[in-house]
Image 1 (cartoon, rainbow, N blue to C red):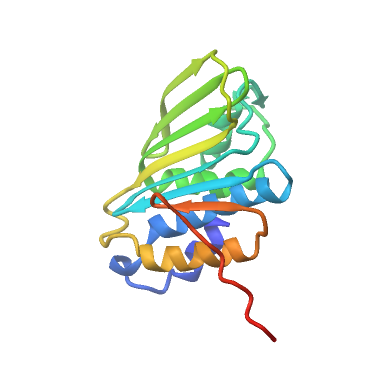
Image 2 (image 1 turned 90 degrees about the vertical axis):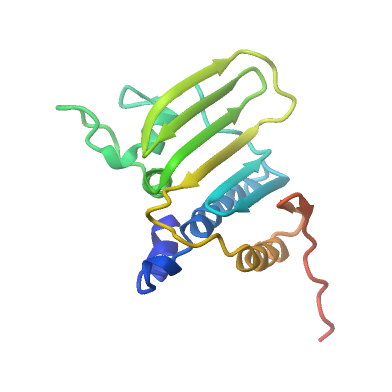
Length: 195
């Protein structure tokens, strides 16, 4: 999703690219997939300047899972570092390619995975994992929160929040029953016009 969204805009001058908006769109689509699978009810989006946060109340990333010997979140968010170790044949994860690209485009990225019994926070800088903290306390709401700041060398202009707002309204209109909050304001899908 990230790759196709960015390729649509690759002909624009670099100062016109809204990488923050494209990353937000991709992350929202991952959350919409959780909604469509019956696991999420609410998506919260904040986007200003080159900073963003996308949070949902879905299942949350796996926090104890490993793939090819690597912790799941490190594997998914640093997938573009494949192959991960000499002689190691870990599987390629298609969904991880887009999320790893989004991570590479950010100067900072923080991923919080909330589960009923624990919360895992993993921090990245310039696409590399720099910190991880697991807290074994119960969480009333599961889900993911992904916050980041796009590398300022990649996006000179502020995020086009108007265009992002309009896109979120269209997503909401196509997702009956979903609750969407953008920059602190709950969005409403437009009423269907009579035929």
